[in-house]
Length: 417
Image (cartoon, rainbow, N blue to C red; front, top):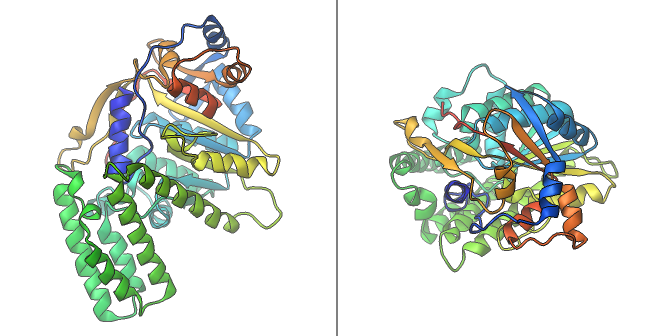
């Protein structure tokens, strides 16, 4: 069920610092005949073979991708088919920049590793989940394919915390004081060992939740005698700790989500000048995040305006187009765990048959291997003209936020490596 799978996603992201969004409760699909008529009229089949796609659904998508300056893929994480779909989108779009739901340090590591042959198994063993979602084989291969297109990989997220050893090692490399560098390496190794001990059993005990104010004050004090770069890195780390610690508190969880979104939007604006000269159009950009981040307007999470809305505004202010695609499975398996000894325990089954936000699209997707592509824009126009009555606020949010909904009849879980 998407409720459970995206709550796993929220645990994977917001509570365990990889959150996409929390989802509303379930409700019945609309019975409005206008809705059903438009749904059927603008439903198109898509045939998938690896990273190759064909059929009327792909032709519709391809035409709109070619007309767009920015394409945003909103997903439910951990499904092996979605990176291949994103790779096919990239082959059409030819993006200058790929914007990912990872931090900038992970993006730099990913860029270097994707240029090397094979999967970075040794790095993953040293820093499990250190590349976040790109610690899964299909996601890493997507990064490699994008690297092969000379697409720059950009991360917007708060500092990743599954591999604190890696971040502290980076800090140590930048630190001039030998004693401070040794301390950072020692602390990083200890934090890494602790995380690996609790990842599969109790992610709520990860170090990001256990840092005390005194620990963070000590880190700040250490950085005062160092370069502005080290000071900035330390502040980024502390900001990430605060976001994650407040995310698990009932009274501050929503504010934490807003803080996280605001951080990602600032990071996007900070990264753009490297790829866009003053007065020039936006570069071709491809985003892939959890679906809650990629919508055109107010998201599923208490009306927060997310990265997708900023991308829309950046494109429209230059008379360019953004295309927002929601892709997800009808049923199957997905990766939603952190067991380092037995990867099979990271595979979870799900069904989205009763999920409010996509229920009519799932219901219209027959069993088999043929994907279904729904052009949502006619539904949105009818809704805005008051020609549709939809009681489900979650479904309304989907229709208002996305141009296409793509349903995969059955998915398989992303593979650890």
